[in-house]
Length: 381
Image 1 (cartoon, rainbow, N blue to C red):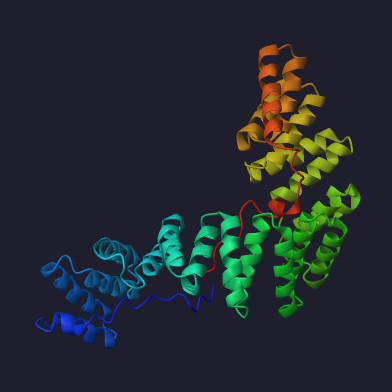
Image 2 (cartoon, one colour):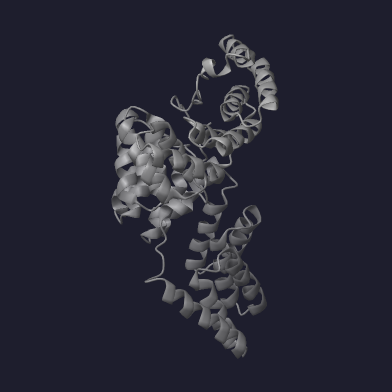
């Protein structure tokens, strides 16, 4: 990612008058001007040993360590400086950036939030804070901050992309749709942009328009990963199973190990009353992707219909293990336990279903976005 504004703040050009009787800080600054960061670090180390309460020296040492990409050591130096003098200019931003560079996104949030609280116009800290929330998978807060940052830097396509992704994963589909449409204006032949617009359209219940976007993406780039899966899923969702089956098979021509496509082909075989074909496909999907909850739910259904109750229970318990917050697997388990005379187990599962429903107004719709990926794209480097 082209984070052109994410550079370390030059924490003080140390007031040389304060060091009139000590040449070491001047030596360090001279070395920095020559780009000799490692040598400057050694000088700052000497300065801090002589005066361990010199927060500015620790801060400057942190900057030079960061310039050498020694971010862990830089963060430690910044923390020491912060403890000694929390009012040092840029210190919170620098600490947050060092933690961000280390991939410690949650650790980066606190200092960056402090920097933004101190100066709401600090665009660097604001952007970093939004990206840190994204990295920590707190997409709603990421969107809040990236929306402000993106308004201040409208010509940064990477920033606009991260904002749109944050909105998508925060289920703010209108925001995501606006963002991806702006991206499409600059990249009209981008299959990925059409797919993302399709995901956002599906999120606001405009599934026919979502299908059209995926059809466009498939025409633009027929071998784009997941384009046929996404189109197939939307057909499946609208009960156009033959069209869905063709698209899932196209996806397997691109990626023969796409577990999601295989699982949905298994589901279609189940709906078409072909239990043996369904089991073969669903088991294959579970082997390729052992966290495919959808495949285990369907396996439980097929086994139950075949009166293979033990196998059905194993499959449904795996589905519960993968996501205990969803009521469907609990309900199906309860029905099997009820039908096999296991009243206590059945009552427990039905009680869980009731508890889940009390926490949600309705069962969650099966949206496309989480089907396309179990995790958002990582932060670009």
